[in-house]
Image (tube, rainbow over all chains, first blue to last red; front, top):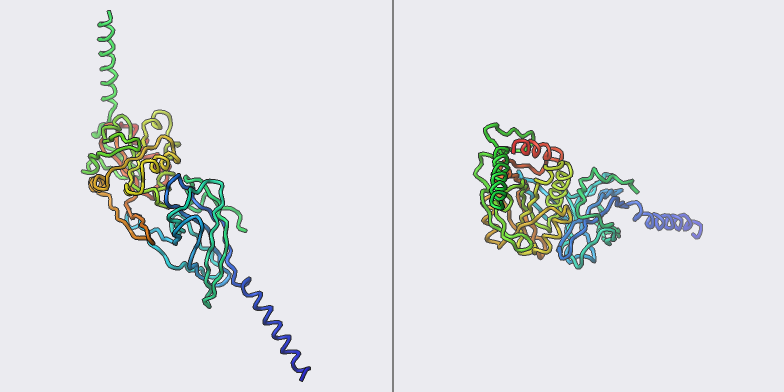
Length: 161
Length: 202
């Protein structure tokens, strides 16, 4: 009996190890994160980044201590009219880099608690949901770039981490 | 003696003025823009009466002698407004000498309730110290937007709001006649090229 239990124990140990390894498997990497500087008393600004999930996931929320409300918005162009709408979740297909930039999807930091100044770091927490509904909280430090940053995605192709 | 000098000065002044007028726009030659739209025959944006961040009243005639490029936005705007302002700053850098001095960027807020004069001034000047902003009461802004056929509407976002709005920039000649519209998708170089076309004639 004791002998036959051994493989099970090994199996359990293996499963336990696998369990530990799972969060790493479902990892999302963030690169080129930045926040646009604000001027004094400006009430909101945007955060931008590139996300790559290792397995199909969704960005379901963003939190930051610098703003009262944080939402993901999508910019749309309808003729010459620029529109904004809130997006509840951003699909992150496995292995595909999804860019949040000023010309498309982006994070809105609304109701800023203070001015966001160039050179500072803004802490963001990304809430990522995997295909099974498991949630991961990913802390990101986003450097603040000048207000004048174009940030179309072409001007700043930094090395991916 | 003094009288004579004064008269001479007046005559000389008139001469300069005359040259200035001669050098003004002659629409007969037609304006052919490569990227933007010729607005010479459009009935649009002919008047406005707003205030700059210092509280001075500003109308189209306040900008006579310069070439204002007017566009609408709000400082909470994360995308189009900073991109358009950054493009305007690049355009200004692409223009040379007199052309650069003529070019005057004017940002009209569509969000006068939240864009205080202080925020507006700091915002536009962060892009280029030569830029100016205009504001007014919500009613005045609505009237100006109507005059320009600029669409805008508040869109609720959380416990606050964002604004959807037209993103086109409008350029006037030195005598306050609307000449050119530049779409959001054009880059700084394309805009500067069309501006030089306008500046050559005007």
